[in-house]
Image (cartoon, rainbow, N blue to C red):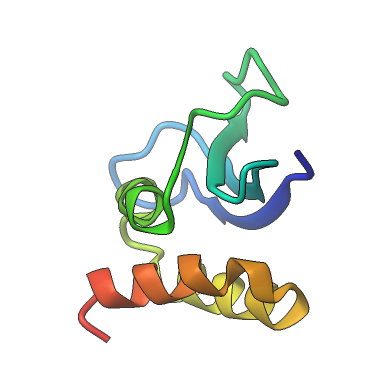
Length: 98
């Protein structure tokens, strides 16, 4: 899998003790994968979970709480560059009621 960077959730946000990056990828079977990487990451190339766009959108929003607009902007840019990520953008927008 080739990981695509989405955003960094900053430790500067109240209540967070660290920062982490959120990355996504397309799997060989056409599903999506996501991962976080940061100071505590042990497995830099491992996916946290894989599944449908709907499934992964839930995880992305949960882990980007407070950074939803940045997440959407990053997913829109990624989808513009690679249309295969459009279902993930659509699923994320749907969860935000857009």
